[in-house]
Length: 334
Image (cartoon, rainbow, N blue to C red):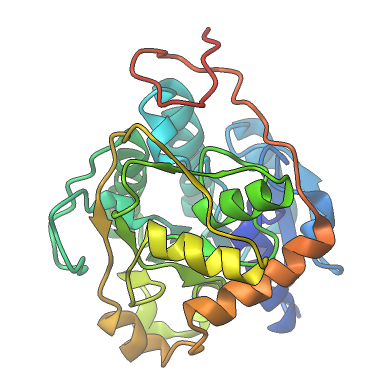
């Protein structure tokens, strides 16, 4: 009998790739996604799609009762770190309370393993390289919400025996990314700007560093971890090892589109300047990464982006705090 798995956010970027690998593993996959950041046509054929939100606890309860999930892969989130300062209520409701709805039902229905995509945002600044044994000190509400879920999973395991695996990915890019989201995912933003004939925009001087992670180095271990006993009840950094400046990244992206690097530098925003993680633990448990470097990964994504074309950026309509909002971001408030 096939095992039933729930993938939240399965119409989104990382989630759609996890769905594909779960289907290859022979799972019966149910996707829950509200399409706020994903696209239905990204969901691989063979998965059963239900449109809805993890914040709808009655819907979540009904799904667990209907499908009796063996595993839960929780990827649904609003993952805009910088914007999270200005949408605190939305951030915690979506990223924390929505997660708790899933954890509650997973405990009640004896789910075998709960797989959670956290973020290196939990570490905060000044802890380099980021290793799993460091004390998390998140700098923004997004990181706070992710770490709160991690702690709740640990408590649920200790109290009720719910097994979990936590992944802390970072700066993931690749096919199916929402390039129309102007608040997050700098590579997608750059590609979208180039295809619209616009200048690239960079906050600050572009010397901030990130290790940009191609999607397969993240999605494959996430999907397969339920079959790796050594991964249970552990936390893993996952992604690329080599950091690059945002200026260097801009040059790599422009080369793939055969355009000159034309940058509009905006005022620096409140963000961690340097962020890269150590992945020794993940390599030990899941094996070596794919070996796809930044140039090769950007080439793959650029080929996909040229086919799908530019997408219009959507404004976030529910800014809660307008004070100190970075240049170019939506300022309507409620």
